[in-house]
Every structure is written in C-alpha cells, then in structure tokens.
Image (cartoon, rainbow, N blue to C red; front, top):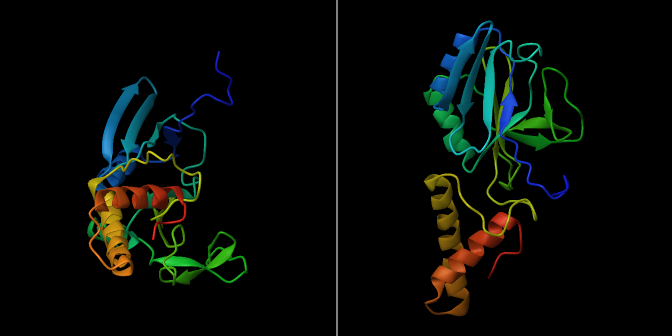
Length: 214
C-alpha cells in the first residue's frame, strides 16, 4: 500500500457558491471556459467548468455547498501574458481591474486590497518579475478571481519534464529562449549548431526556476 505521503494527490475541483445558477453558468461560459457537465436530479444541480489549459475545474449549482454566495476569494488563474489575458476579459465584457503589483509594506483596507502583505500599486511589476503582476475580477455573486503572470517557476515547483498547457504558452517560452540564444551567440562569436539542445535546456531550467544557460 502506498502511504499518503507518497501518493499523488491532484487538486481537480474547486467549489464556488452562487445564488443564481443559470446566471453563473452564462458568466463562466462567456469567459470561454469549457462546460464539462450540467447534471440535475430532485433538489440539486451541479455544473462544472474548466478554464482553458487548466487541470482543475470549478463546480457550482443548487445544494452543492452551504457556503455563502460570493464568499470564495483569492482564486488564482495563472497566465503567461497578463496584458493579453486582461484584454481578453475586456473583450468579453467582463469588469476587470487594471494590472497591479504589490508595493509598500502597509496592509490595505477594504477599498485598497493588498497582495502578499503589500498594498496594490497600479501597473505591472517594474521588473516584470514572475509571480508579481496581477489583475482581479469577480463573478456576478462576487466570488473573487485573480490572474497572476508567471513566466518562470520557483525551484521545485514543477518537474524537469515540464509540459505546457497551451500552444501560446509554449510559443512565448520559445521566443524567450530564442532571444536568450541570440545573446549567447553574440558572446561566443559564432553560430551555435546545437541550438535545439540549448533551447530545450533553457526552457527546462526556466520552468524549474534554475540558473539559466549563458
């Protein structure tokens, strides 16, 4: 028998409380999320949606949870391009915050929510550091979502055999590798015929949060 400490435990479903099931269904469908299920029976109904590229789904419905509608906050959606992700929400008619990052050491109040213990500061992180630029939005009940831009993972956060969940995400990783490889060729003073291996090494190290090749 595999011990609990060694068994794979994959988070697959997050439950969100809503007051109007059909209204919530329209909202999440309009986000472009995949509708996986809409089951009903007796005095219950369960709807499941999955965000594009996500291994985790959300469910809501009637008599699914006793939590107060709108009480779920801080649900993170990881994106590789915060501007593009925000622009897509705007295009879909969703009310969304401006891009912000954490700055200062004070804790914000209800009208100045804070992130990671710091007040929100308008605009993306000045250094465009991974994990640092965000936008927020809410569903019709007030359940709170955040887009967080991650371009390089912390060490140990992912396995070395990193997989990408979308072609756009892989494309951006390849673009970053290409730019870095161009600088590498300038340093060595000649064309590098082993560029495929260099690209692969760069991308794997970047996603694992390790020192990048030079």
